[in-house]
Length: 203
Image (cartoon, rainbow, N blue to C red; front, side, top):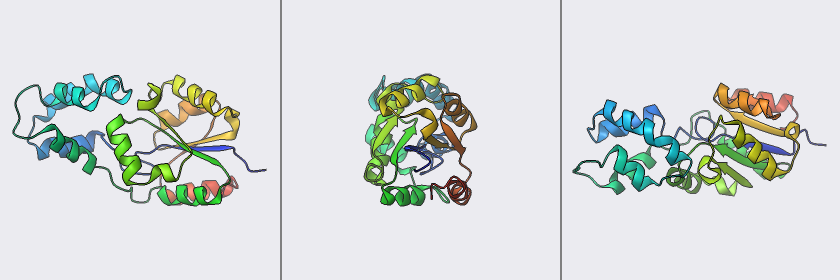
């Protein structure tokens, strides 16, 4: 018997670069010569709702950038956000592909991401071809590390928590998954993950 029924991956910081974390925001804000402190103040107010899909990209941008006239468009700003997404150096995308090719496990993602960047990342990096399910915050209306998102994922899966492995780069997210009964690996790089999965007899 395989050690797990389900393996869930975070996306940003595990498979890909973060989509819209502080480094990515700083790069785009500087590109468009915005006031970084003012943008961050507005972002903090709006980001939770955007990642839970309570608002869309247009509303987020209206509140954070286009509250006054700009010399660039929303489409240009969104393109700059999308451009921040890249394959993560020493990331787990190759391991995910290897697991997908084995057809041994149900594979999915459990990630915090707003709908528009999430759809872009899934399409450009072929994530939907590698996973069976996506428990993204924008689909569930919940964000990690809220315990409810892990319970919701487990309810939908219908599998025992102890037979579910979750891989995340943030300790607080891994700890919340462990509290829900999942087995967890805190991601530090592809080599360490491969070693852990070999120890668990997943690979």
